[in-house]
Amino acid sequence: VHNWREKLVDPVAGIWLETPTILGTILGAWLTSKLSVTWLEIVFSLFLSYVAARMYRKHSAEAPPSRFVTRLNGLGPVLKRERYGSTYTMGAGAALFFGGIAGTVAGLFGIGGGFLKTPIMIRVFRMPAKVAVATALFMIVFTSATAICSHWALGHIELRYGLPPALIVLVLVFIVDVWRNPALSTAGRVLWSVAVIFVPVLSWIVYGFWRLTQKPGFS
Image (cartoon, rainbow, N blue to C red; front, side):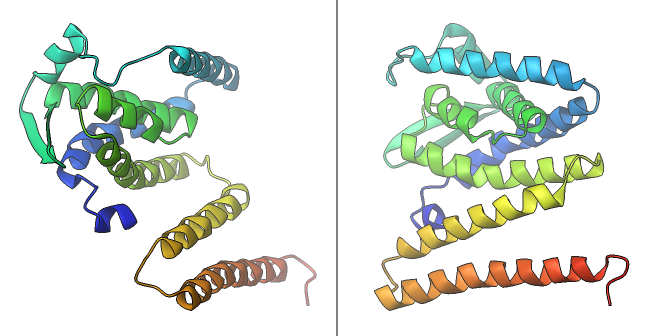
């Protein structure tokens, strides 16, 4: 919300890249029902090892992309955008390739694709860093919703394990956004913070009591 108010999000570029990401997310979720747990563990460990190795390598943000990436970014229709004095382009070929990979990884391993899409937008499409971060957060909403629906349809989701941490994260994000809002006074921030904590806790208590009433022998 804060990034949207500050006009840091590029919704056009985000939707352009998020479309293949959604398709990749569905594919990744489907692959989880086809691959064994052992193979998933092996692939996930190799993927994390590769990411860790890449993090140790030094990269210059000003270094030009490779010839392969440049040619890929020129395939198909090219989206030209401008934000904060920087002009960048996003080709359909590169968006389809990198968006599909980020979505497949998100759907397959259950991790947000933002840690892939942010460096992709910075290094491949030459997007300003703060715009790339804000746009990636905007895209995660759609990626997560697609992954949830896909895994729910496959019967992979356990609400009793996923709902509590999801509520905690939602509350913390809302509190941070409230305290970053300069239009609110200190008292207003405190009241909003207390309210946003109280409502989920009360909802969880009501939900737990309802589950208790459904057990046999409860009277």
